[in-house]
Image (cartoon, one colour):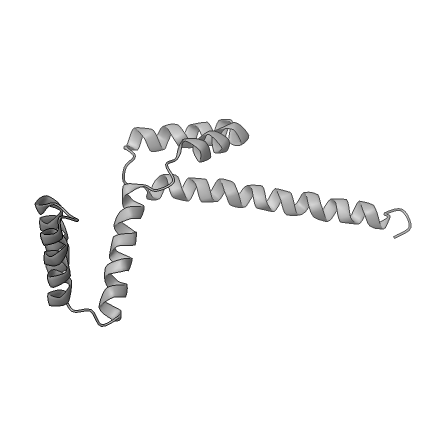
Length: 122
């Protein structure tokens, strides 16, 4: 242990931690790329090639170019909110009454009312 001082040990642990964190980020980007349904097969292949051959730049570009909220994420959030409303004790008829009131007040359009009504009934 004399030949390996404490600061070298700390430095080694830090480098190892950063390496593991980097691997985790790359794997997360690959998972995100392949789970998205708004990418075509060619787009997924392009991102994969970019990340494999230029990992640092590829991951950085992917993280910047990826929208914060994809359509798939919005659908998942809507499903979660619907589930939470149902668990809170709100019945579909109560939701429809609330939507009808919002439409009468002019807070939502007839088109929005129709879409939301279809979601509640489904």
